[in-house]
Amino acid sequence: MFLKLYSTNPNPRYVKMILECLQDGGIIIFPTDTIYGMGGDINNPKVLDRICQIKGIRKEKANFSFIFHDLSMLSEFTRPITNEVFKMMKRNLPGPFTFILNANNNIPRIFQSKKKTVGIRIPDQPIITNLVRELGHPIMTTSLVDEEDEMGGYLTDPEEINERYKDLVDIIIDGGAGEHVASTVVDCTEDEPLIVRQGKGILE
Image 1 (tube, rainbow, N blue to C red):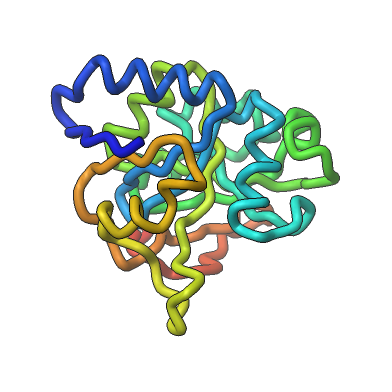
Image 2: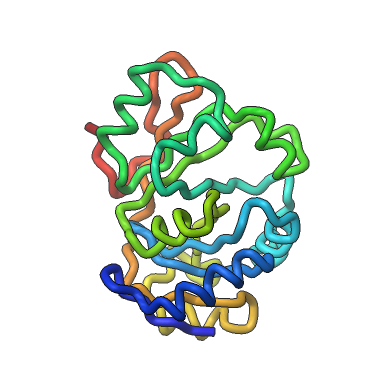
């Protein structure tokens, strides 16, 4: 299903359809403030398996992030962080960043593995953050990499994304053209934050 949503005044009927799809274990493709993402409800065990199957990756090797609607969700999934890290995240979010934090014991239960860290995203994109708020818990997400592109690029055109994935996922949200640049990844698991991938975000 291909649904056009706007950042302001999104169609309530479409929003309801997307939320019901997520609650039923559906996989959606959605816009962020960088590249398009693929994801689903973290509370449904089928979601991880389905996404790994679609992307052709092993569950143990998968790098997923969680999309939050704000920082109030942190303590449920991460170990305590320092005031400095919290202030840095607050300065830069919502925004085009993925912050890697030490996970608490809720994460292994979700991933059925010994995963010790989790990536946190709060995109500056109301379509997806409002869906997370309505859903009541994070959405698991992974980047929509164009595996057929020799340069390892990203799919940015919603129409092209629909052509490629319409038979693999349940809903594709057209939120306008995506970016060519991914998020900036900041590892906050050690004493000093470390930029491990410079993307769209410039850290303040």
